[in-house]
Length: 96
Image: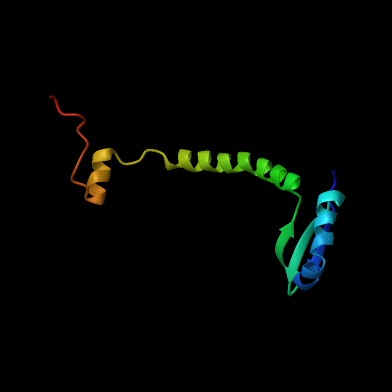
C-alpha cells in the first residue's frame, strides 16, 4: 500500500486528533505533526509501525555484528583485571 504523508501543525492536530487517527488507520496515511514548521512526531498505523520496525531489525543486527567483528582481539582476562584493578578471580568450587 502506498502511504501518503500529510504534514499538520501541532495546534491543528490537537483539534483534529480523532479525524487524523481515522485517516492514518483507515486511509493508510502517515501524518507528520510539526511545530514551527519542523517535524515533531509522526502518526502511523500500528501495522505500518510493525513493518517499519521489522525492516529496521536486520539492519540493526548487521550493525552490531559489524561493530563486534571490527573490535578484533581484545585484552585477555588477566589483562582486563590489571586494567581495571580487579584483584579477585573466580576459582570455581573448592574441594570438600
